[in-house]
Image (cartoon, rainbow, N blue to C red; front, side, top):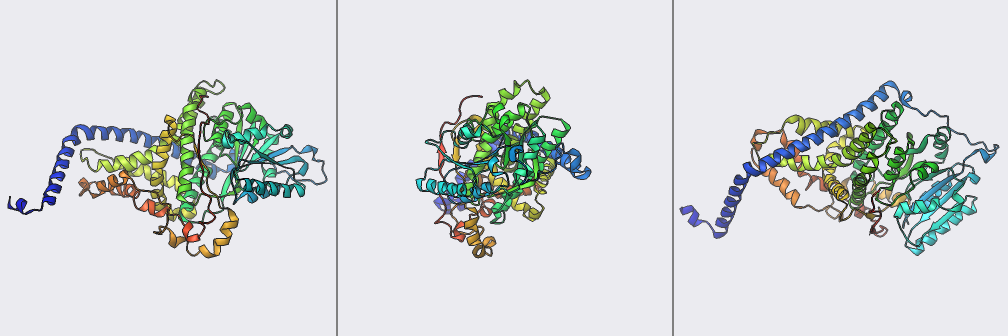
Length: 558
């Protein structure tokens, strides 16, 4: 009693508040929190097992191919075409190359130059620059670049619009409606930062010529700035898994005729058969993932796709956290929104079997586009930390440790040169799981920012080459620099995770320390490694400001 009297009023108040909070927590822990947490663990465990089985299945498929020989599971075997200068070019199909762009000041010369430099008979190649830029000066520069290549004998068509209806999909759709496109049989599409090699068409068109059932040939991405900073290295690890496993797996099961071919056309670095585009209903602007929309509709129409893994096209990764976050919002929100719009269409598609329809809905959309994001955030960043506060909840090691560890290893092994960054990749994915989960929910509910389109900033090789000598020795040291201004902000969820970490003893469940530490990284470690190195490279004066556009681009049902 004497100690209580001698305490300062502020200390008494804090003690009283602490006692009240402790009393409230003990009152609701068993009757309310424990049952809800137990239900959440069951749901998350089911989703975790679903994702685990999907990852293991794809890994086994790829492993069999590597052991038995890829050629045994390659349906489309072709000899590369060779350009014969003396041969009549009438035997070559007319190919259209589309380059959609929007205020791409830093990279427009790279993409136009690479497209115009493709090795293909000049009278059978049309380069179509679809410029939706709002900057009049930049429009003039792009037009001058087109005229320069026209003077060199390349047929270049410079197209602009008075509006930006449909954004990229709208530009591509209107481009295919031009009179001079009617004689074109195939269309190659490259985003403004993509630079194909000269022999790109000679390594893709033969597939389409000799296999009339093929609607698309997709090439792999090669990142020119993967070594720019730690964040780009981590992005490379995630995208390498997509191309090395998910895309390759589609080729194999297509050969084995186990399921339809909803190959995820990635919007660029691919060659479409124009007939396949028209048969699928053309480009639609109902979501922000018009590429995936078209690919799924074409696959349901019976068209086949092929992924050429040894054919790469150079492109650029977002090197600021802000740009990457907006890109991931679009890539996570769009598929979820497309899932909402296409479910009925897939169910009622009589062209494919019930088993194949279930596969598209379950594996392609639900597991890979929804569950993959939700498990990482809800289970590993919310449920597991909360279970520390409720000792009555029993969380087994296979669910908390072994399954996520297996999934992580299967994802990271596709980029051997970055295996030493595995821990940082885990922390980075935990950070991004919040943004991806939020975006997926927005897409499913079709609310708020569902149609938001943020132009990803690009710098191009020219700018990067000027700073290579100056920045090459400083990239490692500037990660996490206090002067960076593009860091993600911490929120209340971060504080909650830290409180879970402060809980003493952990009720002798020491194996949870791994998951808890990973979750806590959302506040500190994950944010620290996502630093923007641009201030160190002194590029503020040339960095374009991202432009956000949000309007009604397809709220109608399919």
